[in-house]
Image 1: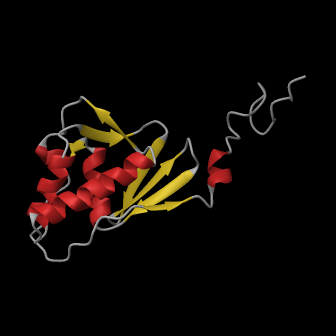
Image 2 (image 1 turned 120 degrees about the vertical axis):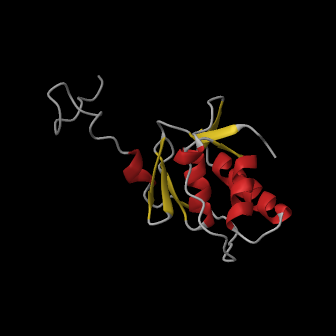
Amino acid sequence: MSDQLLRPNSPSVVSEIIDGEAVIMNLATGHYFSAQGTGGELWALIENGASERRMVEYLLLRYRIDEIEARTGVAAFVSKVREHDLVVATQAEPAPVDEQPATPTLTESYAIPQLNAYSDMEDLLLLDPIHDVSEAGWPMPKPADS
């Protein structure tokens, strides 16, 4: 388990948490992702610069699970976000505790954190009409190079 802090790989990765679901887009690849429930909670920690150790501690405080289950879930989730180039390691200090996601009361409804990947909108997300324009601006396309 690493003490290295993780954060979103911006500017190519953008995300928003909506009703507990993290919606994440990798603008460099055109893929988008969703993480609901426990995965959304871990992504919220990553947005604030969290280590794997901090994520495990969060799960242990939040759910009625043992440390091995928490470590396994965090390791699998972190492996997936790394695989899709959604995070980078940082040397920055973690956000103060009051800026971290609130820790709700202990509950038994733990689910293994999942990251769902989608590529069906890859062509649309890779399309960059705003920057592929002539000096006259949108909607005038750049002239083809001779």
